Length: 210
Image (cartoon, rainbow, N blue to C red; front, side, top):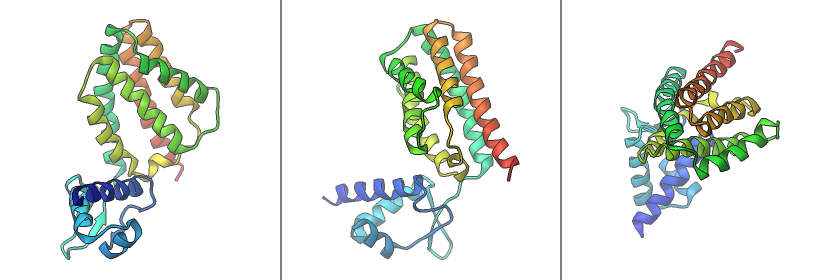
């Protein structure tokens, strides 16, 4: 029972941090968290220990717990890493042929490409499904877990939430799918790399306007 409560507390607190309800650089109070999430101290401390091991929160010298921020440098490093990993995955997927999950994601992306109004969290979930589908089509069983970890870190950087138009990103995704369906590994890898180049450009453009 304690393990189940710890897991629930871990998931709830992490979701609050990822969603921005608990902001970066916030000092956490165990008492306040216990009240807010309806959990006793023992499972709460277990949940916080897990978040500390994942570097979502940090323990300061005075023992206080701080929600760690993610710098733009760290965010851009994640973008670069994912471009390499997912470019390779797109090439491999093209060599193996299309995949049902990728086809379903393409249908979803077409609606966004046509300019459908959508909130950040809705598109973020659809974006998850697209990138996971490419990994699955490539047959890389470990890659979705690696991507989930990197995306969770990226989501904690406030700059990731500044966009509210996703048609451009959706068209970039569709270009990857088209190359995979055509069985063109070079084009699939290049399309995925262009997508991440554009992700990087969009972040830097936003910073340049501040």
